[in-house]
Amino acid sequence: MKVALKFKPKAFEREVRYETTGKITKKVNFPSHQTTEANFILIISIELVKIIQEGLMELSFRNEKASYIVSGDIKEVPLTSGIVRLSQDGEITLVEGEPVKAGIEGRLIFPQRFISIGDSWENPMRMELPFFPRPIDFIIRSSLEKFELYEDDKICAVINNVFYSPEENKVGKFQGKEINYFDYEIGRLIKSVLKMRIISNIFGITFDFYVNTDTV
Image: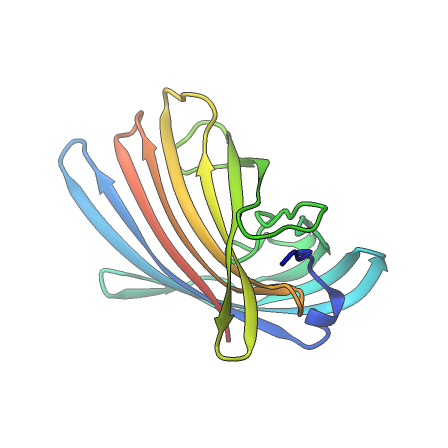
């Protein structure tokens, strides 16, 4: 079976809400070994504002909840809202407001062709990482792993993303894997799970991220 992976305006005509939960583990090697953990929750609502042109839509986003829990202390994060433009292949451009720091952030760049199980594609990306002096260029290698029934009524394309850097970087390194469940009939992301490790050689710090985003 071959399918086209595209975001569709109809999928956002009614408000869509995503809940992102996760954990950040920070390990410091100098001057002593220390480990701290922070849990977080973020709820974002997204809704179609208008269609700019064929294949390009304008969406409003609003953070309904954003908080961190560190050592039992809850820290509320200021709520933000704004406007983004989303192309059918998944590229996001911020128009107004603060960037959305969870869920879909331009990583889902789909190929302009029909694909089937086993097909793969790559996209170059750039990321600003904590404790790195400048952004790091890297590659996301994506592959369509399978089709899977989700919540008994949604057939999703299961997409694996592997993040890697094509060059050695003396200041540090990172590696990550992500699995996305994309409803190709409706035309939107249903769920994603991300695991990432960032190592800063300069500061002797390691970050481990686990992020789960689901539709609510």
